Image (tube, rainbow, N blue to C red; front, side):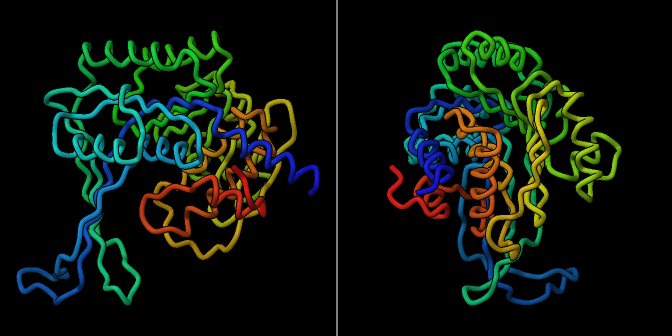
Amino acid sequence: MTEATGGMRAVIDGFGARTVVVVGDLITDEYLFGKPARISREAPVLILRFSEREVLLGGAANAAHNIHALGARVVPLGVVGRDGAGDELVALFHAAGIATDGIVSEAGRATPMKTRIMAGGYQSTRQQVVRLDREPAGELMPITEDALLSRLTALASRADAILVSDYGYGTVTPRVFDRVKALARRSGAIVSVDSRYQLPRFSGVTAATPNEAELEQLTGMAADDERGLEKAGRQLLERLDARMLLVTRGSQGMALLERDGATTFIPIHGTDEIADVTGAGDTVISAFTLALACRASPAEAASLANVAGGLVVMKRGTAAVSRAELGQALGLSGSR
């Protein structure tokens, strides 16, 4: 066993001793599957004959599911509505063995739900035809925000890491993020952020994980080659006052930029024939955060996250990667 392999084994075997709090937008992912039947006479659209329905954990809930699958103790914190989508999401957590003490319910608020209509038969690849999003309207009620802050303080004070998963649905308010940073300063916990639309407001964190398109949008700079990506990444790193950035680049792999170190370009793990990228960012930040919490070096953590991301995009739908799968992909048979 090489020194590098031994280091990776030690990191993965340490997952079970870590606690990660995931704060963010809990989303219910719904998949409706149908077989193509004919073209409608009412409009030039395809008619699908319904075959099955599947409901999965999405958004911050998917990040929490990935942390759990990797063997760590996870504490999801977020808000659901008192509706069917919220009930299903909580039931999925219970079925997975994930505690829901940190979840607050708010009457009159819709649980975010993404419904994907999938067309295809058993002998053919199922393709997404259209997506329908149900979204909460307005900000959290003050009483809801206060309850979330109270649970955050109680449940995150001894966490090894706090993962912030912001999909723009209003869970991670300025007060919530300020509390995250205050708790992390006291405990020394790692803070990582994945924000779909508002990354610049999450400054002073350990790590952020934008994709290449988000990096270009935030900096106004082209990042489609290594030189451009490094220049844009350094600008964003400075702006965020973060210790590191892990930029996901699709079929080009990833780039790790450290505040006090070099830029490392990591080629894609496995094949570039991707089955489904849904939720892949959740898997990447989960593996990266957990590895950092196990005192992996940034380069080791990025390598693990890259392998996890390469594995999850070969699965259809919102999915997670287990510790056993990660260990097997790294050639570490017998990882506990």
